[in-house]
Length: 273
Image 1: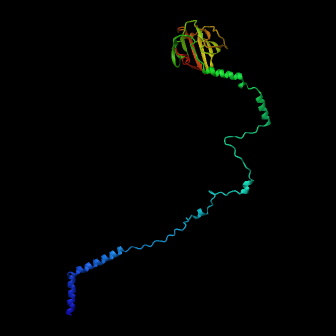
Image 2: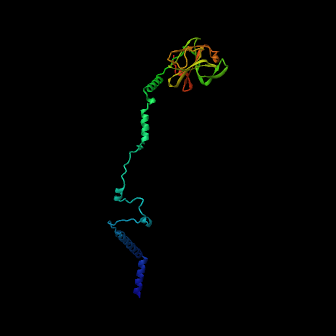
Image 3: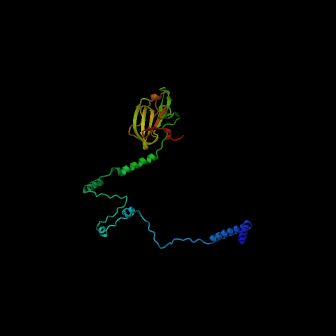
C-alpha cells in the first residue's frame, strides 16, 4: 500500500514538475512527423482513360437530322433525259437578233435605195461645208468709222434725251457724219428692209452661225434690196436722219447685232481699235 502511494505520488510529482513539458513535446513531435509524412507522400489522382482513336460525332436535334437537304443538294437529271433535250446555243450579249425582213419590206427597201437621196447629194454636202467653214471663220468689221456715243444697254436702262425717258438700248450709236457710207459688217444675205417708227430706215443682214446685223438711221433709200448676197465691206447705204426716236443725238449710225433671236453686244464681235 505504501508502494502504490509512492508510485502515484511519483507520477503526480512528475507531471506536476518537468514531466508535463516532456509529454507536451512528445505530442508536438508526433503531430509534426505525421504532417511531414502526409506532405511528402505524392497524391495519387485517378485520371480517366482517353482513347485517341475515338471518333466524335456531334448529336443533332431530331428535327434537323430528319430534315431533307433540298436547299443545298439538288437531284441530278438523268443522262438520258439530257441527251433527249435540244441543244440551245447561247447568243452573244448585247447583240439583238435581227428579225427577218418580209418580201414586201425588202421591195420597199430596194425602192428607197434606188431613189436619190437629196440630203447626201454632193451639192448639199458642199453647201453644208461652206456654211460650217464660214461660221467658224466669220469675222466682222466696223460698218462706219467713228466713236461710240450711245452704249449697248439691255439689262439696265439708259436715258433717251429725245423721248425724255429711260429705256433699253439694244445696240450702239456710232458717230458718223450725215451721208457717210455704211458697209456690211460681214458676208451675208439681206433679209429685210423696213422703216421703224423710232429707228428710221433699217437694213437687216443675216450671217452664218445664227448671227444677224441691223443698220438703222440710214438714208431713206438703201443701195441694196431684199435677197441680195453682200460681201464684207460692201456698201449697203448711207447715214441719214430718219431715226425720230434719236433725233436729239448727233449724227450717227444705230448698229445692232443679234444671236439666235436675242440681242448681243456688237462690241463682242467688232475688232478692237
